[in-house]
Length: 478
Image 1: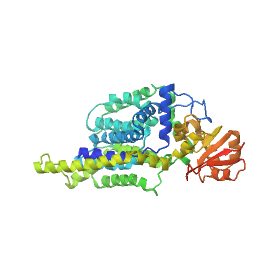
Image 2: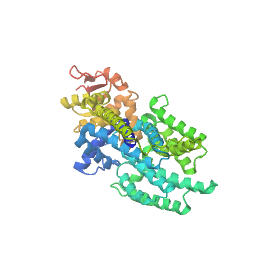
Image 3: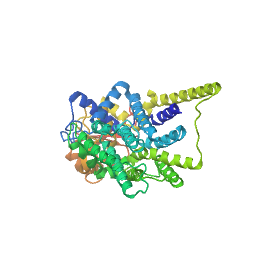
Image 4: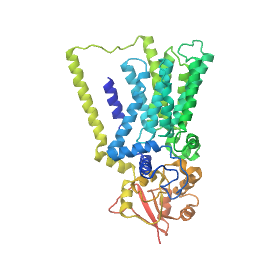
């Protein structure tokens, strides 16, 4: 069952790398490795030389190494590896037998999978699971491995700004256990006050470890500066509240309803720490859709506690057999072999070169980059935000106008860009002030429609040799 669970998680997590942010991370990793740490923007002409805290520099080195060694298939397996490791880190702190644990782990994985992609955030997903493992083992099993948290935070702080999740978990445990001492009648299972004091000390040491990075104390500001960007909440899907009209969010609702249902039917109830974790991460998930994965991590073990309590209460326990006959053993071996073979074929079908190429051409400006590489226009480029990361990677000699590094560009610049891309406001003035010589945007966008009617601009793409329904390129007439 354990092997089957890992295989099912692998199938669920393996996907073609089509996220445009993947590519600017790879490009940044290459630059860091070959040119040294990045302290000022080297990739755009609109913000060239501006200070930039590249908080994902460590993860970018890993992504670049994965790309160099394994290419697109390597990136797909990178996502698989850290998704599986993250979910399996929760297995020891789940309750119940192997069947219940496997079921709950799969529910959590299906919920979190909506935001799995080949990006630094996969490392944050893994580290958040490890943090929860350490904290719940300290609370429930009296296993004191808190000493691991500061060095882990030192590593996490040099990989991705998702380290803030670790502090959210620490604060939830400290606050929840304190509330338990104040309000709970039964103090069983509550960390003693001395233990809570140790958690506070460990949290302080984790903060100290966090500032050991190339950017020092500036790293502490990154999560706050990011969430305060209004343009993220207004225009970037993963930073908006979940759209429950879309089926991709229904797993989140299903897990939440399942958690509420089992909690209502079981007599166990939630303790204050569990309540804080669920409410806190659910609030973050409702606020920013990308935090659904954080909710899945926190809710998975708690769902198992409630489900196990309910099943025990009803007497519905399924005990795995410890001994089977030789015939059953052979049959199980055959079934497992067939299952593993089917899973392997499913994984291979995702990472086949033709499958990857087709998916990337459908989701990324691959044909556009090929055309530009063969017919490079002169001067400054104005490009779609959605494509900036890939163009930065595919056309390393051409500075982009904008890309996914929202913390670099800021609200004012991004709002100005968006109005221009929509063909609104003084878009002609922006293109003139920024000395734009050519434009790469989505076909049918407001700016593309406006430029088609401008005598000063000429469309040079798509062409007969480069048919494309997604993109257009305009150049300014001499």
